[in-house]
Length: 195
Image (tube, rainbow, N blue to C red; front, side, top):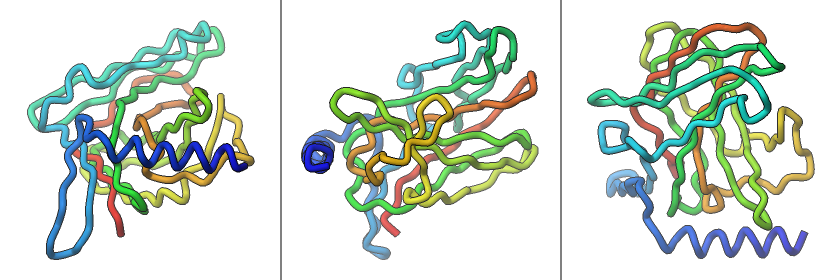
């Protein structure tokens, strides 16, 4: 446990040393800090795709970009025990003590996962939170960081450390489902807030 706490403290020091490709925004009126990924900015080349083909599956996904948003889309195949597609992006210098995450999205009525990734002793650990979309409706969805659950290959990790915003090194979206078919999620902004 001491080792985990020490690692989280080191993450905090490292996170505060570099701004990465996000935008730190300060609001004088609310005395809050936010780290925001604005998809109207240059996001091309920052996102990487991981599909179930790493395990022999045949699903495929992409992250493409329009003028003011990104689009995570593709097709889920259940062949060869497949069934997921994901995109991830590195982040740095998240505000300490961020409590909420707001995603500005327009979906297709399906359920997606938002994933936050930390590293412990060189091992990648993802925390997930499901969110349901409404067909063709743009909406801002607020998720509490405290509600994200650590998981590995679909299994919950009960002994995982409490998620601290300064330890987060990647953000991502994942589509997984039990039926084959297409998916499409438009993402306009993703913000970490201290409120």
